[in-house]
Image (cartoon, rainbow, N blue to C red; front, side, top):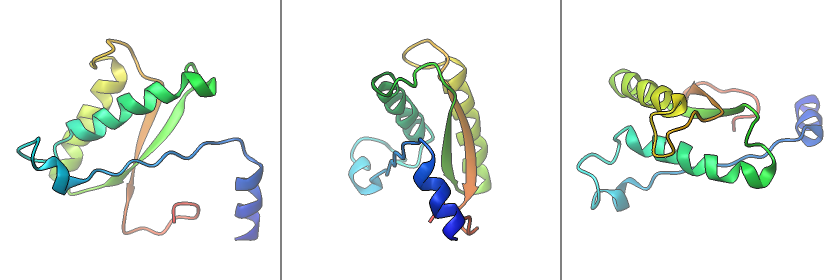
Amino acid sequence: MGGLTTLMERLPYTLIAVAINRVRLNHHYADPRHAVLPGASLLFLNLSLPERGEAENLTYVLVERGGAGKMKTLDLVSRRICDGTNSYGQRLPFEVGFVNKKEKRQGMD
């Protein structure tokens, strides 16, 4: 594990975490698990890229995997948003990957 820690300390990266408060969102959406919410997170993340000088670079986004039905919708919505079907009308520089929350992966804890 020491090798991973050393590598993470030396690599230039920024970690941004987004949490969705479903209780609070119950008042605004019929189904707070709706895939539009992670899509909104991508749009907000896109706003932070220029100040970091990363607006033109590919950014990897890891999303916790949910149930099979939800994942199909989430994957489709994420792809559409990144391909330009969003409120900006432009492609977003993200590659979205889905991580099973039951799997233990180094660096994901």
